[in-house]
Structure formats: C-alpha cells, structure tokens
Amino acid sequence: MDANALPDLPRHPLEPPVSGWLNVGDGHRLYFEQCGEPSGLPVVYLHGGPGGACSPRHRELFDLTRCRLTLFDQRGCGRSEPRGALQANTSDHLVADIEQLRQHLGIARWLVAAGSWGAGLALAYASAHPSACLGLVLRGVFLGRASDLDWFFQQASQLLPDAWEALARQAPPLARGDLLAWLHAGLHGDQPQVALSRAMAWEAWESSVSQHLSASPRPEPPSAEDAAALLDKYRLQSHYLTNGCFWNNAPLLARAPALALVPTAILHGRQDWICRPEAAWALHMNLPNSRLQWLDGCGHSPFEAAMARALLQAVSHFASHGNFASWAEDFSAAGAP
Image (cartoon, rainbow, N blue to C red; front, side, top):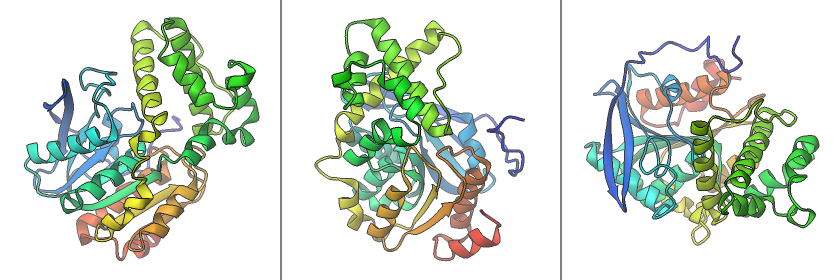
C-alpha cells in the first residue's frame, strides 16, 4: 500500500475544477482553480515552498460538499507564468496577489488554510487584511526566523548526521557552516550542472528530514523537464530564504496583534523535523485566542492520514460553527490522535 494513501478518509467529489488565469501585474500571471459547492464556505488554500504548487491531492483535504475551495499557484510557481521568475517576487507581492484574487472571484471573506511556508504566508496575509479573513487553519507552522533556517540547514544534522554529511561533504569545508549560502550561490551561478547538482542535493536533504530517513537521492538523473522544474523550485526557494522571506522588517510574531480577532486553528505534528513544534507553540503563545492541537506521531506532510483527517475536521468544524471555540472537544470526540 502507498504510504501516502488516505484509505480511511471520506471520499469527496473530486470533479474537474473550474480554472482560470489572473494577471497580477509585473509580468506575472497566476493560475487558479475552484471546485466544490459554490454556495459553501469559501476557503483558499496556500501551498508550501516557497516554490511549491497546488495539486489535485490538496482537494482531498476538504469536504467539497461544504466548501467552495480555491487553489492557486503563487508567483513563479507551478502553472503560474513565468515559472521561476524572481523579479517582483517577494512576500509583499504574494500577499497582494491573494487579495487581488479574492476580489477577482467576488468573495467577501474567506477561510485561509495553509501549511508550512504557506502557513507563514497566511499569517502575513491575514495581518495585512484581517477583515478579509473568516479564520485561519494552519498546519506545520513556518515563521521564517533565522533560527528556523539554521535548524533546517545546520542543526537538524543532530537528528540525521549521515544524511547531513551526504549534503555537507559536497561543499568546501569553509562553506559547511552556512549551507544555505553555498546552495544559493551554486543555484544562481553560471554553471548549469553545478546548479542542478545543488538543487538535487537540497531535494535529497529535504526528503530525508521530512521522512526521517538516511540520504535518499534520486535513483536516476531527472529528465530535462524535471530538471528545469527542480531548478525553478529551489532557485525561487533560495531567493526567499536568503532574504529572510522578506519578513525581517516585520517578523510574523510581531504581527500577531493584528490577528487578535481572527479565529485561528493550529495543527502541528510532534515529529515534524522540517518546521519545529516550537514554532507552533510560539505562535499560539502570541495569539491567545488561537487553538492548538498536537498530532502525536505525525511529521510534516499534510498527507499523513492523521494529519489529513485533522485538517478536514478543522475546516468542517468551522463550516458548522464559524469559529474554533469548541474545536478541541470535537477534535477529541472525532478520535483524533
């Protein structure tokens, strides 16, 4: 059986979505799609990354008989054009894009669901446009702090020393203390093979940390199409991470007061090695009105069965109640781990 399969989740209609494009300026055009019940709870899902994309699998995380779901690919990502473009591509641009998309779709307010990088972006969006947000459902919180980046690229070596060594030994000794800078330099240099090798090294390390495994490089070189997509993804990701996700002037936790009236549910796996549980706790402590649920045994992926069920349950609870005040009781009653 596929370890990522969700055999015990309710099957919701996964009809082909209605898709479109939105010109957001600066030469960027966003791909978006909508599916579900047109009169249902408006929900927008923000994908991870930076550099990820929306996927048909994301639709499985929502009860489409109760939700009007919007998915879209962020600037430079997935099917948005031009893919991989870094010009006019900052967190402020992405926040403005989300709001422009909401207005374009004629949605008065929506529930923002997101995970990992998307969770940080959701916080940035909601703090800038709280009146547009019915609430937040955040999984695997990423805050983009220097300590978060140091954890992923350096300190996580304490958990996976062999996988980290497989990454670090590719760098000169003097570069091993700042692997993000080394990766970034190669990805944006003028040697295509070096750039691809850095992207593949990053991908292998990320896979190891996410899945708690020893180094797991690709069994064979990527096709030309896959190589181009891999380069675009990690060039964009390094663009954001080396710039502090463009949040250094206004760290996300410092924006928490703007979210005081936005109902917020936080889900975090206790075994998440990509985004440390400490980040979810820090956010919860800065948002007294938030609700936090830990998922024992869960890691980072939204497609682990327990996490997928919890995400679906949180959004369904909001669809029924319009808040998360009694979510903990429903969460326990549903038999969530």
